Each structure stands twice: as C-alpha cells, then as structure tokens.
Length: 308
Image 1 (tube, helix red, strand yellow):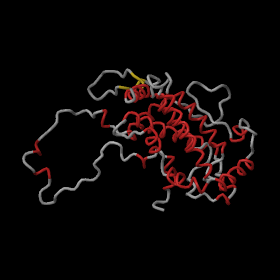
Image 2: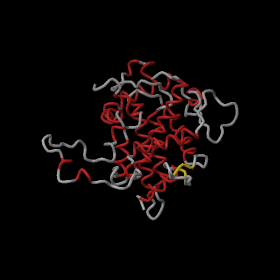
Image 3: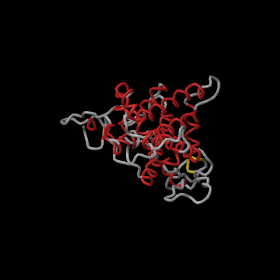
C-alpha cells in the first residue's frame, strides 16, 4: 500500500478525484538550453489585472472558503445541550440513542450480526467499489451527472463543499463519541481495506455523500424537465450506496450511517440558512465595498445556471 494512511483519504475531501480541477495541463517540459522565456521579447510582457479571477478558483480550494463561513456560524458543542438546539447548533446523539430510533431497535451485537451477513453475501461483489471509494468518491457523483470540473465548475464547487463540510462536522462528533469500529469488536469481519485512523460514529462517508447530494439538489432546476426530481433520485441513491458499501466492508455499523445522514441533513439546514454570514463579493485591499451576498446562496445560484 502506497503510504500509511491511504485508506483514510476518502474522509478528507476526496482530493483524489479532483485532478486539481482547473489546470488541465499537468507538468510541462521546458528546454534547458533555450527556456521558453528567452523567446523573442516575451519576458517583458505584463497583464494589467491584479485581482484573482473567480473563475480560477478550483472547486477543492473554493470549498475551504465556504468552510470558513460555515465554521464561523455553526455551534458544535462538546456536551449535549440542556434544552432545544439553537438555530446554528448541531448535535449527534449517542449510538444507543440512534439505535433506539431504528427499525427493530438493534443493539451492537445485532448490528454486528447484520455486518457478518453482508460480508458473506455481498462483499465479493462490492469489493471493487469498496476499494475505490475508500480513496474518494466525488468522481462517482460527477460520473452519475455526466459532468466534470471543466464542463460544470460551479456544480463541482458544491460537491467539494459538501465533502469538506461533511468531513468537518463528522470528525467533531467522532471525537466526542469515540466509538470503536466494528472489526475492533468482531475481528473476523476483516475489512478488505485499511481501517481508517479515526472513530466509527457517525460515518464520515455517509455524512459527506448525503451532504454532497443535498448541496447539488439545491442547485438543480425543477423546470422545464424536472431535472431535480429525476437526477436527484439518482444522486440520492448513489449517496446511500456509498454509505452501504462501508457497511459491507465491515467498517461501519448501520447506526453510524443513520447518524451521518441525520447530521448531513441538519448541517445542510444551517449551510442553506439565513444565519450564514454575508461574505461575497470578498473585499480586497483598497476596496471599501461591503459584501452583499451569502456565499452558499451565490454558489447554488451559480451552479443552477449551469443546468438551465
């Protein structure tokens, strides 16, 4: 295995699917004896514009700007709030509390029994997806929508934003609940990929994939062809399949998945709400113009324009 933490990359922004999103030309060769800059008088040429063009932001890096806005807004407690959650608060109940809401109210042993059956019945068939999605899965969403960072750059920004914020909030609650992974409880599950180096609950893949789907669906138009309804069903199904593959692999309890779905839905409510800061257009030095728009709302509007 190349690198000691390769199996964890899928929970950290899915950078492997980016292709760095924007350059498209990779590494260029240049002559040692006659570097390109020595040709003619091109070394003296200058462009007047000094401000970074918004179109030059790749989706993976622009998502970090959105994370700053979200982090300024969201309240992630370290202990369970005593009353109702505030409009910007997130909380994930204990695994036992989530199990109590599930069909059959399973306990840990019953959930492990289900994972044993999944390993016996489905793991061999799902192995290719399990291995690939362990490294990242943004590419699956792009393929399902027949898009790329070049054809739909604003839509891809939403994918990277959902992935990054999903990782951010899920890791906070993983650190609080400290739930052991299923194969640490039942070693015979023997996952086919490396067990990630962070706690099990809630599932990062489930949180990320669900939040990515919610972000995209907010941008898809309902008219004239009900793209939101048709394509929305496809990406919802994909998000659920990605989460289930982690269970087939033996890496997550189903209650991890359920908690991740709920966390993603609640995070999206904050992300898409009016408590987010007004932060765009971004003021630059010598510019006293105040921002007028919430960044996520602008991202959704921009992405929607790619589908009209």
